[in-house]
Length: 214
Image (cartoon, rainbow, N blue to C red; front, side):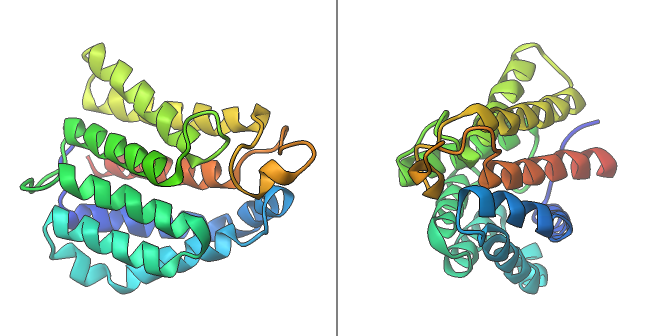
């Protein structure tokens, strides 16, 4: 199999993410209530619902225009710092897809790297801070290793998914440096970061969607 995603394909992936987020409402809210203010699910769900409202228009856009539009929608819809961070991720990613009509495996890696860079730059954060960065960082790390080992596209996707899961689970043993959890006496140790979990859902959905489609 080979990875080739159009704008329309990417929007279908976003639909899968929206559904996954809805399905995990109680779990995400519970996690966020333990370490934050309990509104992570509400904010993220609102953002992805708005993307679905614009679904047909997004499908017709170039990859660059689509990513920029996604950034604007998420920035204006998701409350708190998450909206700004997701928006920054997609704005950065829009630069690497400029002039491209399809996303292949290599470009997908570059998109994830751009998203990671955008979030870290805007959030002044890095891996180990107990955030969604940890999930994305490990997903990219495993993906790069797979590329370096001349893995197939399928193996690259599975590596990305495995890395994302590992990164998410790592946050349970981390002390929070950012967000409300850093003000707790235990710094959130022993609890998964809700942002890391929802980032994992997105990367898992991406891998599964491409594998099922191919």
